[in-house]
Image 1 (cartoon, rainbow, N blue to C red):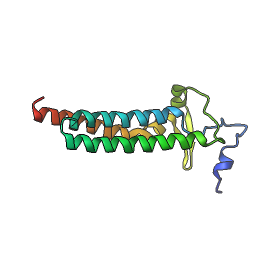
Image 2: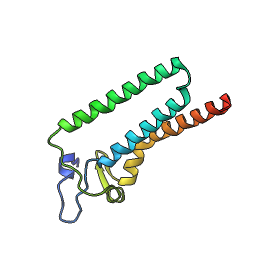
Image 3: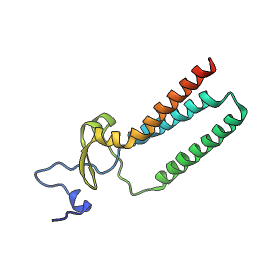
Image 4: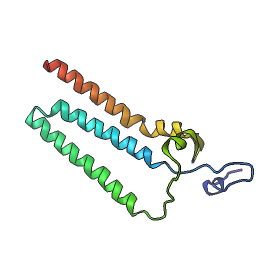
Length: 134
């Protein structure tokens, strides 16, 4: 029997209702990872004028992407805010289209790419500084 997402969100008498939205802390983790990557690029490529120009353009794209996303999320009025703290959310469970996952598992799924890219960008910046002799 197929159960729609709407039906899964109805609390049963035997089960606890599982939130179906990400905690706002998830978005801060992703934004901070992208800021970390931009900072790594600035530290690596700011010495050369042409490279700094390209990083400036990338920084502008970053600002437009996250700025527009923040504006659009602020305009959405029908969202119910998540009221529990970030650590409590990580210890709990979250409803997805394919079933419930742990809060920590959801954070890993959301943040794995931006955090990995930030680490890789930092490694590139360190390697470039080492090659340049600085």
